[in-house]
Amino acid sequence: MWHRLIPLLLLIAVIIFVAFNFQSVRRTIVYKLNISGDPTTSCCDEDMIAKSDGKFEENADMAIFNSQVIDYPKTSLAYANSQAVLGATTSDTGAEKWIEVSLDEQKLRAWEGNKLFMEFPISSGLWAPTPKGTFNIWHKTRNQKMTGGSKELGTYYSLPNVPNNMFFYKGYAIHGAYWHNNFGHPMSHGCVNSPLASIAQLFEWAGPVVPAGENTAHASADNPGTKVVVR
Image 1 (cartoon, rainbow, N blue to C red):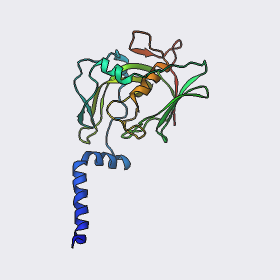
Image 2: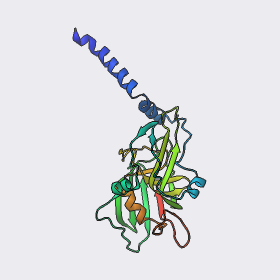
Image 3: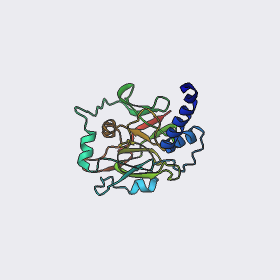
């Protein structure tokens, strides 16, 4: 008798799962079918980036990701602790520095010539693609507010104090992500999400160099941006 109820029980289990995970399932389906409808294609516009002072916004009291309020480090001291890397160095062999982002592998590698400096998993574009090509970091900010996504689709985000931003193409950046720990899988609107400790080290290693006591740097002939290859 019980075996006749198995199909019904399985159907009920599927309905319950979908009901409790509706937004997540919807986001996955629309992405796979390339019909997301989400208009966001990068985290920031260039004017907003240029106007940013890169300072930590101490008064920010809320962070939202995928339309849900999340916990996040609310003080600059908390950030400093979360990004600390014991024994971290910023090596400089004199060889050309460049950054490789592999979308297929969901990994970032930093090179000095043909010598690997560091490697770590990343999360590239899920709801919008990460642009492929060869670029150079044109601007850096230590902290940046990022907003976008769609409330209707459940992909809305409002994220204060995103750390260690390296903008390599328009509003697309390699930056830290405190709102998820799913690195190795696409999770962004086109940017390259990175673990906090890893991105803190990469930020100091890559050009343009942010002067001591400053929170932003714009690439120039005297302070060039590191090459970024996305493939």
